[in-house]
Amino acid sequence: MKSRSTSPRVKLPAFVFVTQVIVVALYAAFVTYDEHADARFQTNGTNPMDNAFYRDYPAFAHVQVMIFLGFGCLLAFFRLYGFGGMVFNFLTAVFAIQWAVLVQGYFQFSRGGKIHLGVINLLNAEFACAAVLISFGAVLGRTSPLQLLVMALLEVPVFACTEWAVLEYLKINDAGGSVLIHLFACYFGLGVSFMLHRPGLDDGHAKQNSSYQSDILSVMGTLFLWVFWPSFNSALTVRGDDQHRAVLHTFLGLSASTLTAFALSAALSKNGKLTMADVQNVTLAGGVVVGASVDMMISPAAAYALGATGCAACMLGYRYLTPFLARRFRIQDQCGIHNLHGLTGLISCAAGICAILVADEETYGPSLYETFAHRAPAEGDPKLQELRVLIPGLRAGLGRTAREQALFQVAAVFATIGVSALGGVLTGLVVKMPFLDPPPDRMCFDDGLFFEVPPDYDSPLKLINDTTQDSAA
Image (cartoon, rainbow, N blue to C red; front, top):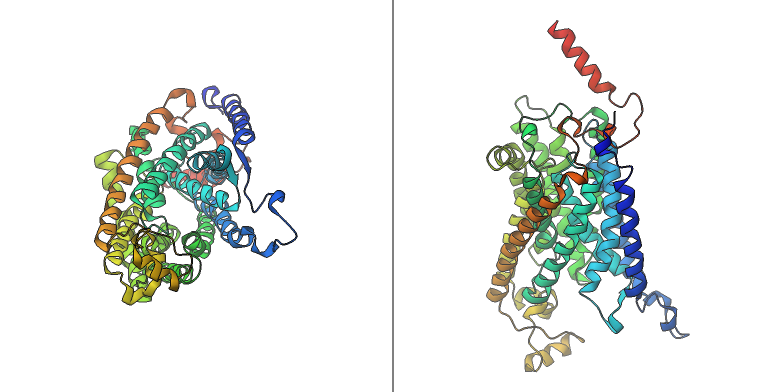
């Protein structure tokens, strides 16, 4: 039976309609086409195949699959919350992307104070959306759709501000998003989860479990993410050898983490059997852990070693750290985002800093100053002119040393964690307000509160309860 206070009948449509009117007005006032989508810039001499669409769309399409199918299926692992996991992911993702186009565009105003929209804007907005969906995993099943939309509404601006500050002022290397996506999303989500702590769920919940069918669906999400993760990590790298390395390193890292996950899952299990939660999550650790150094000359062996190391950290985090955080720090992390994105993100950042410190011209040649653009000589430096003979069009950099660049990377890690955690706590203060219709404890992890569900949707749970009662009798 739906509770009147939690029914989405009035507040959800009102929120959606109001925000959509505002979004349409903002798009009308501030968004126009970029030069690759604007017919006025096309002439008889324009080669259609030079359009940025052909460069950016493949990565955009792959990330689309990750966002809507990968995350959607992965989050459908609760027995009675399959609709919520997939559909609220769908709802939140669409809202976050259209909102991120505006918020990120605010920091990129160009001609006439307009946002010039192209596929690259959508791709960047999907990275912001990925951060929102990762954070969503920490509060999965304990929030209403209205709470999730408000969370996205507040998280996207914090993400965009952090992204702009880190890239514009600290100017770091973060091709795979280890800092700006994984660490940010993790600690923002944990901040929200801390504020949404429910004492009644400290000892678990009867509906906080999976089923045979829900686990299969969740593994499908894992496979979508696994297959397309190389596109995610390489999408914004320098075209050419940098992008090529990013794909290779991501595949090797994922391969290592997958095999290691199967081995550790069996070894750490009391009966030596595989655990589906490990297959669904820990196998993906390699994609995160190579992110900060994914376009660098770290060697294939290092990518493989990083994948195995990240997997081990992630596995141990699920076994020991998640229960500790719940018990000692009131952080209920439903999807274990601290293990898959936080621990592996920190390892990735450490590996990236090491790779920056050892990078030199002997290893990279002149392309060192393309991969590490901020180490390129500043404008006016005679060396810049020499390098432009070898690399036509090379942009002036800041003339940083390897050590200086590494220190800026460290500063970015700490700044991102601090800002995201604080932003998550403040967002949690807003999201926990009663008028956003949080579900009662007894209806957490249950689709019946927000969806029209078929009569047999909870029959597996009833069967287990009946069997338990018969055994007790």
